[in-house]
Length: 425
Ligand SMILES: [Zn+2]
Image (cartoon, rainbow, N blue to C red; front, side, top):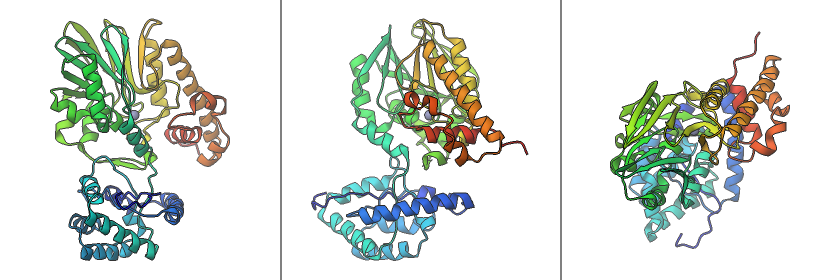
């Protein structure tokens, strides 16, 4: 900020999630109340609030707010404040979608012009004076992961033969480099485009010709559009196309993924399995069935004996499980068993997250999932609530080794619990 104001908190406004809040269940409302309490605390600590991330797909009452924000003036700022005052928290809150918003660019531009700064300060002062809990606090790990990707300096790590792995832009990216082009598994986060382009160039000047999305999550698909622009065909399961063509809500991340621009959507769909010849090598793509999501593909490079598992395997970490979009602990266990069965001691296995590993680590991971599943399931079947199961710490024996990344022990317990069938009556 050129005003020299220190910003201790930033507000993200996300109309993209405004619609679902109208139908919140009682339980969700309780969680929402908790969020509001945290918000109010944040507001007290903030020097200034920045409203941004106003999504172009805004609906009432955001449509009006969007219009006001798009034409900044003192009069519009006043009107904005008036409208925000009338808008209930449930409608005006929830924050997110950092990556996709055109308004973000607008706001960044505004921040670096004197008039823009004045407008923002004006909004901030009025909001703070009125103590309106306008907006919100970034709950989502998606934001933290994007921030990491922005800072990442991705260096290719040669794995075996023609195959390298790029780590640091969300999920791991596997690259098969051949003289006339590259074959990629996953496209990382769009914020890392520059460092990824550089990393790919470091491997060779051959262009990307294919990218397989191991599933629809943004940390594996967000780079699709720029890869497509460089000439790559995007391959994925039909459910990845479905999610990337619509808004997809992931409550466990407090996040709504907006549809991807058409240029980034997959055009070559694999529902079950597909074997491709790629410049003298063989690539086998296969669907796991519902596991981490409803769209998980594996990619096996036959000659190099390298398997990319996508997020069916997080090497050394508790995995995320997208229960809302086809994932479940039982699906994850099925996929882990399949991975272990398919590889030999010699196979190099590229996980969705974490370092490249081997069969022994896959098996340790599979057994950890099975043991925790059994413990959580036993408690759930006794009629214990989710909070009671979390309090019983069924993951305790594993936490030191597996609980140190995005998915902490409590979060993982909740994910396992939510994906299991309801207790018998
Ligand atoms: Zn994922």
